[in-house]
View: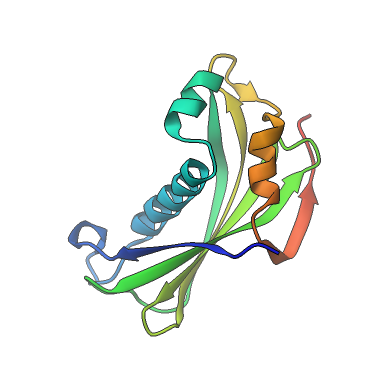
Amino acid sequence: MSDIFKKQFKARWGDMDFNGHMGNTAYLDVAGDVRMLYFEENGFPMKRFEELHMGPVVMKDEIEYFKEVKLLENIEVHHLIAGYSEDGSKFRIRNIFYRSDGKKAAIITSTGGWMDLKARKLVIPPSDLFNTFKSLVKTDDFMILPGRP
C-alpha cells in the first residue's frame, strides 16, 4: 500500500473571506493545486498534458467544513482517490484539509473526467495516466463509477 499523497500550505491573505477565515473558493484553489502537483510528481507535468491535448475537468465539487483556518495558519492537504470508472474516463478525488493542530478543517470531493481539448468531450486516458489514479490511496467509500456514455 502506498503512502497518502500530501502537501503543506499556509493560508494566505488572499485566501481569507470577510469573516476572517479561509474562504470556500480558496479551498477549491488549493485542491486544484494539490491535484496538479500530484500529476507533476507522477510523470504528468503540464507539458505532458499539452502534448496529449487533454486535461482533467471537474464536473462537481462538494465541500464539507469542520474547523476554521485563519490567516497564516499551516494546513496539510491529503489527496486520495474516492472512485474511478473502469475505463478511467471518470474519477472522484477527495482532498482532506488538516490544520496544524491536527483537526480536520474541510473535505472536498471532486468528480470529473478526462477531456480531449480538441474534441471537447470525455475520453479514456492513456494507461500510464490511469495508473497514477490507481496508485493513490483509496478512501473508505471508494466506488467504481459509470464510464463514458
